[in-house]
Image (cartoon, rainbow, N blue to C red; front, top):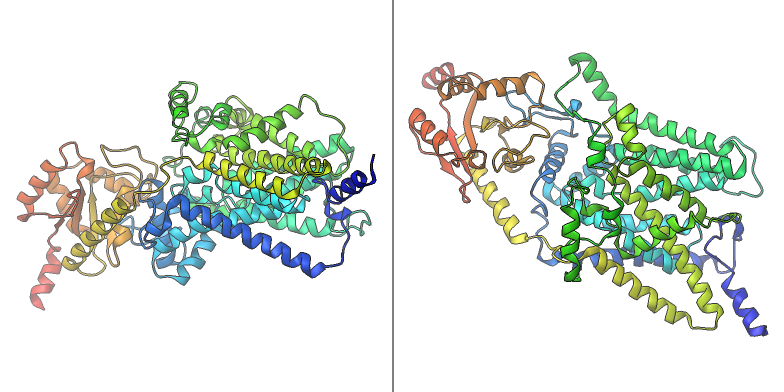
Length: 623
């Protein structure tokens, strides 16, 4: 072997993919240059992520004062943001659920991290729509930076880390959920959760009170970081917390089997306990409320079979997305989605893309040819976590047993796909570093490999994103502004703080569609109002909701009498909730109230004012 070849190999092996922080010198010449290079890498990755986002969504056409998504669950999330701006927090909103108030203690969210970040945004702007849009858009570069940081902790090179981070940020999971599942699409804490699980598997954590380990300089610092990470994960959605705890326990068990040490499982159990305490702290207000008011048996009812309906399907992960850039592929994907073996309504979000699928299949293949791992090798840990994730989440897997034997409240196991996606792209990043080492060892030029990496990343992004991702900004804006003008006209007719009752009755939350009303459509009026109180938002199973439900079954004359007695000043009608587009109920109200309705510009909404209560009318005459 020539001296040139040996020299080339030595240069390549200075920093292999599996190099750990302990194996690198603490301080090298050119420290500040290295620091500046790292800062430039993070800045470049964030800029690249933002640039891709601008192009994909054509944000130059968007008006950030108009919600990008204005349907389904996105409306409910908007009501949270507006509620935080008006009331300080999301749990109680006195302007919904009239004649009472909306109280979400029966339907709590373990998402305090997201709510706090939204609160910071609404403090900087008085427009809830701007805060809502910014939180979604900022999620892309934030996920890119989070993933880049984690990959760099395991010695992945900068180019491979940036490529994997961008691909992870634009997985179909992110774009498909969008603002409809805003907190699920803000998965920037998933990479740190995987990082902690890998630290447990590789035995890189030490107890804070332990003596300094000369072979593990940062073990205690990593433990503190892991404790903080799990506390944050516990406050960023119950699904991600549940999946992270499961993978931690798997990592601890695998560490025990590989290294014959109890430290791994003990560390895992400690971190799981921290997450459990965090979830409990998030739910504490609900526990107090339930103790005072009793359990609500009508809300958040789940059934064991739903774990099968919303289970993870390998076919959905490895197949291409709908509206793929290669049009000929779309009919086959659509055919698969229609199969009875692929039920559920979260199909496209599971897809991993071509690059992610390659990494996923590679990790599965390693199961059949696993050899003894080298010290610090991350790949075996990825393999273990990958197969464990699939075994939990797939149809008929351990998740189905958990739902049947322990609790059906966790049902959407397809959401584990975002963990699988990160594990797969993590493996791809390692393979890219190995390919680069092989390429350079044979005397090829580095720029050639870098160009190939750029092309691979660009192709992977095009494959993941597909076509028709641009929202119909003009249609959403016209609808949003039309609703706003309609509400302003109502506010001009009514005194401040007036109550408006909404027809037809529509339960809250999680109510099946009623004709053409779906999701949280009735909350639209509140989003545009500054002073009015609305009936929608009374939680199912509580007193106000029962009163509204019983009222809807009474004759219209009696309904009007009770509404006046309850100090309602108007009735808003969503015509989409009636088979006859509200013709019959409006004709009857016109006859009883002696007035024609106010109608919105899109002719979907109408409004009737109600007479004041007799004592209020007497006071008005006296004045």
